[in-house]
Length: 164
Length: 262
Image (cartoon, rainbow over all chains, first blue to last red):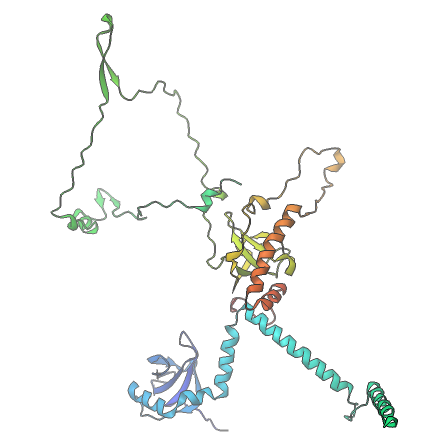
């Protein structure tokens, strides 16, 4: 498969290094093989050069002429409605969940573990009952308990029937 | 223990003295800053034109002449207001200085998050891995801690802050009253009385005395824990806090304590 994401003007990318890590930017211009000029007017990233090594490319691309001023980048960014599109992507969901996980404190981690344990308890009970009631070939199995209950029901019906 | 008051309250004087001197001697009759430079540094131009108020001091005379009765006594005599020393030492003695560097006089540096009510994770000792509640910081710099005993069987205990992780979970211990008598002295080890030597065979057969909590300790444990448990109950997440304190701390794979938040 050919490459889909290129380092080009308008390519949206994610910063992966330093204090601005995790923010989205648009590539404005390529400086050389290793560096590009980026700008993120709506994500709090001022226009600056950035190493490509520390930049992860997304599938999004907005359109503006190369070396466009911040004003133009902002306009293209809002017109593209990038924030909404990014939020609906799997990548952003994953990264936000990673952030959530890393920011958990000790008590939160305990609560998470506790909730997981409760869920797994319910799951194993449900699984075991299903397992009991199915044969190895997948057909439903009738247990002794069921037969007994069936007989009891029949008996009760017989008792009530002659009275009428 | 030695005087605890010293460790508790470092005396603060009113005027702040700068640690570095304004001017230093460079050697060879030279100062680091010249007269004019010092004039600037001291901001003495502010005082230009002002006059210093003259403070009148009354000098007490060194000696007083007193009239003396009796014909053969010369009528008057010069008496020093300060009595001269009656005896002078024949040998110079080296003065013994008070020991400054004793442990009790050390300044304590307690980590900022070590505030009463914090949940701590113990990292060493026989209760390691347990989550406990910090009650207060003792003057010796050790932390007073309780399990509570009913939850994780960690008693009232002193721990060093070095062997503890402070968590961000807090309990509001404003209503908890820790008895005054629970201090550093309270936790001191009771030394076995000497002079028990009986025979020569006993020298190597050292007996290990088991620690048995006294009735006093049991009672204190009860009073403190009752209050702490009340606080936990009042907490909106009290149910989880209880379970949290009961649970042990451990690391699993791919968990790095320096990257985690507590």
